[in-house]
Every structure is written in C-alpha cells, then in structure tokens.
Amino acid sequence: MKFISLFESFTKTRAEDAFELDGTLYFIVKEGMIGKAVGKQGANYRKLESVLNKKIKMVENSPVLEKFVLNAVFPLKLANVEFKEKKVFLTAPDTKTRGMLIGRGASVLKVTEAIVKRYFDIDEIRVS
Image (cartoon, helix red, strand yellow):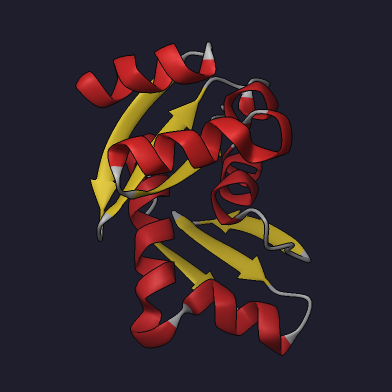
C-alpha cells in the first residue's frame, strides 16, 4: 500500500497494483498512462528507483491477454503471441530475443508467467 501511494505521488498517475518478485518491485499502471508514469526521459522511473533503493519495473495493464503479455515483456519485441487451451505461446523473432525471454535457468520466463497469472487464468507460458 505504501509503495502504491509513493508511486502515485511521484508519477501523478494511478497504479492498479504493486508487488515484489525476485527482488524487483512491479507496478501495474492504468492502461494508457505508462508514458506519464515513466516520465520525461525516464525521470520518474529513475527517481523512484533511487528513493526505494530497489529495482523497479512498470507494466501497462490491459484487459486483452496478448497485449498484456507484450507489455510485460517490453522492451523485447515478439513475432507472435497465441493463447490456446490455457497456454500462452510466445514466438521470438530471433534466438537472442528468445534467450532474453527465457533468461538464465528460465528465471525471466517464471517471473513473466507469475505476472500474467495474477490477471489471467493461464497454466503456463512457452517460448518458441
């Protein structure tokens, strides 16, 4: 709760949720407000990181699963996002992006999966 109020006072935007995963603080920002939340040239982002003394990530909320997944993995670009039988399939445009999506020991993929599971009823995320 204190993280959300601090976030809102710094960015002058509304955070719908805040939670911590693997030492990173995640803020889910209201749809269409991510630019204002990050600030000019990332000023709000950097200020918040230094005040909280934690790594932070802002994710723009969306009621559409595919768009939410794209926002969660931003700045990485995906070739395709598909949803079939409670599974999300991400298609990376190249092997470098694929590696960054998965991370060492699938750490990045597990965090992305945890974020998406908070808002959508899915079983798993797979990368190809």
